[in-house]
Image 1 (tube, helix red, strand yellow):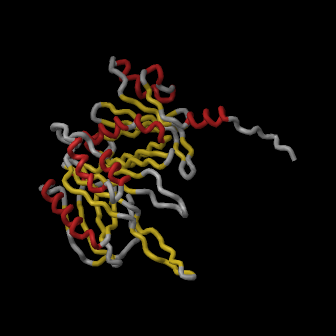
Image 2: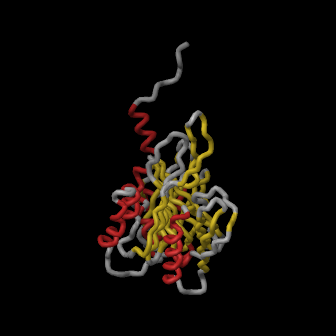
Image 3: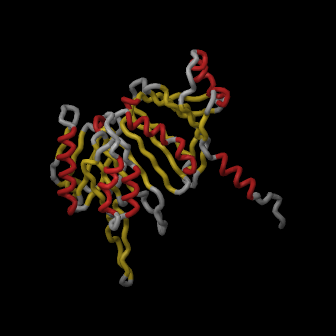
Length: 323
């Protein structure tokens, strides 16, 4: 039977792919009509258009996302989420952002902003886009991160060398770590934890394993705690890309390490309104993890943060990284 459908041409495929690209809005005239009401007061007041990026609706293999427009206006990040012919506005004061997550895996990228909105309510907003346009979002992520970093001389060149010892251990994570630094940050401590697996079944002499925790890295700088991890691998897949989380030190309510029933160590980062981020380490990393806690104590001597190193046994909950 002959199909009545048309076979997509290369031009059609290219057009569809390009339609998933984010783009910068460079003028008031280029703002899509649905969002113009938000910008009218700015334009009427003679204010220049703030840095603005449109993330179109996105359909990935496992994820779908509605169209969103994001802009940085003064000390606030505004995210406008389209809903038909109108939009829902989310405003995050920079001082209220608990963390930013940046994920890049193949062509599927996202930026998640979590914290307290202008109304004082905890919230998370995710912008999903084709990875080829990730450069458009870097100024926004950098603006959020710089809000918690004191001005100082640029030392990035020297600080990047702090990860040179990883060149033969994990070249990929060495580069991930180097590119995660702002030019004004100083590396205080870092821990690289390789993938943790456990055997689940042996058949005909062949042992099968499951991943308990993907490869991840914790980097303490003088203004942030940076975490980097691989995505969990689906059956037989290689891993491409990673997930970066940038946490201002002033936003960490509690940092603790506990011994899991499996003998692994659990590092827990408690945030006031944004939940808890949990990471697993092998027992051999105990000294490095405890050094991390000591370094955090030294940087955040104040009543807002609780740092605990209790090694009481707890239930092992198959942790990797969760928000």
